[in-house]
Amino acid sequence: MSDFVIVGAGLAGAKAAEALREQGFDGRVILVGAEAHRPYERPPLSKGYLSGKSDREKVFVHTEDWYAEHRVEFTAERSVTAIDRAAHRVEFADGTSIGYDKLLLTTGSSPRRLTVPGADADGVHYLRTLDDSDALRDLLARVNRLVVIGAGWIGLEVTAAARQAGVEVTVVETAALPLLRVLGTEAAQVFADLHTAQGVEFRFGASIERVATADGRVTGVTLADGTDIPAEAVLVGVGAAPNTDLAEAAGLAVDNGVLVDAGLRTEDPDVYVAGDLANAEHPLLGRRIRVEHWANALKQPRTAAANMIGASATYDDLPYFYTDQYDLGMEYVGYVEPGEYDQVVFRGDVPGREFIAFWLKGSRVLAGMNVNVWDVTDPIKALIRSGAAVDPARLADPAVALTEVVPGSSPSAP
Ligand SMILES: Cc1cc2nc3c(=O)[nH]c(=O)nc-3n(C[C@H](O)[C@H](O)[C@H](O)COP(=O)(O)OP(=O)(O)OC[C@H]3O[C@@H](n4cnc5c(N)ncnc54)[C@H](O)[C@@H]3O)c2cc1C
Image (cartoon, rainbow, N blue to C red; front, side, top):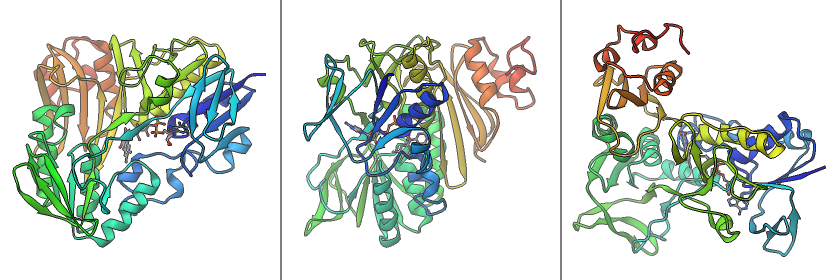
């Protein structure tokens, strides 16, 4: 009987344990997590859970009983400090260790830290964990003015929750628009307009010189151009970095995540990686990508689990993510490197924020984003996967069904 160890008890770790059991693995499954909680999902932490609209119990991946019921030996508040690949053991700070036959690394990522003077003051917040979200929720009930550093997804979602709690928000962003790297100018403007309409003040092209403090507490921020912005708290949302230390120290190949093939295997036949940590070959895209999204952490573990058991599976789902901000709901599917597209085609009512945007390279669709339009992810995926040439005029025309945009395609195509 084999012992499988999973290091990192986030969504990917929990889903891997589930997939191992679903796929009939009967040996030991040991899930080790650094946090005090059983595995939970992070998206609600900046949305419904943060604003108090959804219950705490809903964030957890499984019920408390699920682990024992499925013979998953889950240990919280335990950090693996080293991997001895030759001995097939993971080690802990107290000198103890656990042996494995197969090892899955799902250590995820951590927020990038602000390094300017004052960055460690009381009132500077990050948002990654359930505890962070609890602290931020308390904060939003107490403060009047918040500075958000970074207009990425987390910064903007917290901004929306803060505005809904009546907090004045200034967002400081080095780029000229929010989400510019991901969406490009055309679609990023939609998010700038959305937040501006809600009374959010943006400082674009701006960087933080220091966090102003009094008695160790935040009193505001000073920008590089000398502007002072008063605030009682600061939320830093400047991206995340993969937790590669363990893998790197164990001699695994690391470059923006741990390098794995399309089956999520490292170069060590007994070590696999999934979720935010994996920089994986993508068969359809023909390149390695590392995806920091919920759907990837939800689904990749199935492939890793299958291969750990001895199957030969590949992961080729297209990256997918979503956001909710005020009354805007959005889904995005596909993959576009910054600047690697020729045009964005809009279909629907952009000012009214009810539309689909498509990113095209030549006449091929690389990605699509539906805003307040639902049940279109499958046809958008099919368009991307087909690699077919599309006519931008037909793509933009809501009278042409998405399944009929490619001439000769079947209206019932998936
Ligand atoms: C606030 C927030 C909102 C988000 N919203 C969205 C969204 O709307 N849509 C979307 O698609 N994605 C969203 N994401 C991204 C999504 O949550 C992540 O992609 C997902 O959590 C990745 O899961 P993971 O299991 O790979 O890693 P993680 O969730 O990072 O889990 C890794 C776990 O491993 C633990 N760990 C690390 N090192 C060790 C060690 N040495 N020993 C033991 N344990 C260790 C960590 O403590 C952590 O608990 C959001 C993320 C955040 C933070």
